[in-house]
Amino acid sequence: MFQTEIIILLQSYSNDYLNTFFQLVTSLGYSDFIYSFFIIIIFGINYRIGFILLYLAIWNGISTNLLKEIFALPRPANVDSAVQLLGKDYLNPTFLKGMGAESFFGLLPKESIQYLRTNRFDSYGFPSGHTSNAVVLWGGILLFLKNSRLTIFCALLILLIPLSRMYLGRHFLADILGGYLVGSFSLYIFWRYVFYNESLKNFVFRSDEKIELNLKTKIFILHSFILPLLLILTFKVNYQYTANLLGLNLGFFLIWLKSTPDDSGGIFKRIVRVTIILCLFYTANSIWDQVVEILLFNESIFATYTLRVLLDGFLVWSSTEINIKMGLMQESGMKNPI
Image (cartoon, rainbow, N blue to C red; front, top):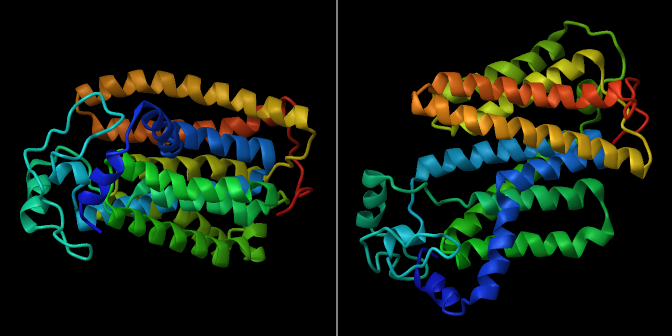
């Protein structure tokens, strides 16, 4: 499953049409699409289910990234120069050739593993983040929204996104299977212990204005702010994931203090909500990209992380507040429960 021959066989059928198709498919696993996806779900379909899926995706991302750092295994193009990086504007930079596993169930040679760990010119491959994301996003849509018309579409994406990663030379079959396992486990945990936990949902998506500082509230605050900080200090988790989590928690906590808004409304109102928030999000992030270049140039990692947390928190909170102020959402309780 760590053989490069499987990747090379897939790439032997490559042509401009397949390259374009699989690049389009794999783009559904990148952040720009995923952020837009959640904005549409939260403000256009179901506010509460959207936030549950968003938390699921972030925790899945943290789990996948943590496993990548633990296993620290190379990608196909890192161990065999015959593997093409389709969709990239540069050639495979590795000097290794034919250093994948010798058999289907064999492991990667120690030399090929150590080569990437020593030089670290690419991110680690196992498990596949695109695959685990595909499972939680599109599998979550199937489970939480229960729309039979989306079944075939979602199932195809769960199969095609991982296939695109192999075709483009970014993942072994083993990476794909690992991604399926991680994504399925994350989806099961949220499905079993969050979605069907009515007490938890009623507490998180509360409709009353009174807040009691009881044990449940303290645990909620601890989970929202202390746990992400421990992840930063304890594990080698990509700062973007923990910044997203902490920012999301900050923004949602500010919303939670006032109670969960009612997201009912017709199709026109929902389209307007989504359009406004998409414009806000991409405007803020285009400015952020310029700020990051300056901060990273000056090696201000702490400042970069802090500003990312504050920006994400502001976007989550302000997105809801803007819709409420414009009359596109209501401050009152749970007319549209999940």
